[in-house]
Image 1 (cartoon, rainbow, N blue to C red):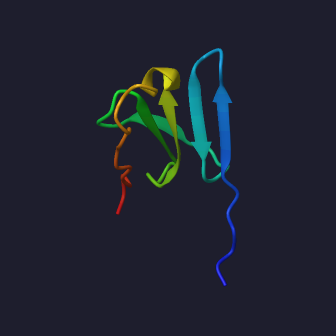
Image 2: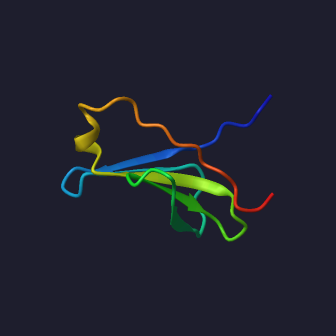
Length: 73
């Protein structure tokens, strides 16, 4: 049986910012092909989360889509 993972979702209404974290470890944000989305990666390039800027502006748009990729294979 696969072990369950804790995923943290945090929304800052005042900053209109959503962050989802898959793992709690040191990392940094880097740009994606979508200006509204940043991916959070660890030192090895593994995806550990993502953030969405100006979430409320997305309400009247088509679904938001982006592919998150590992930096290191």
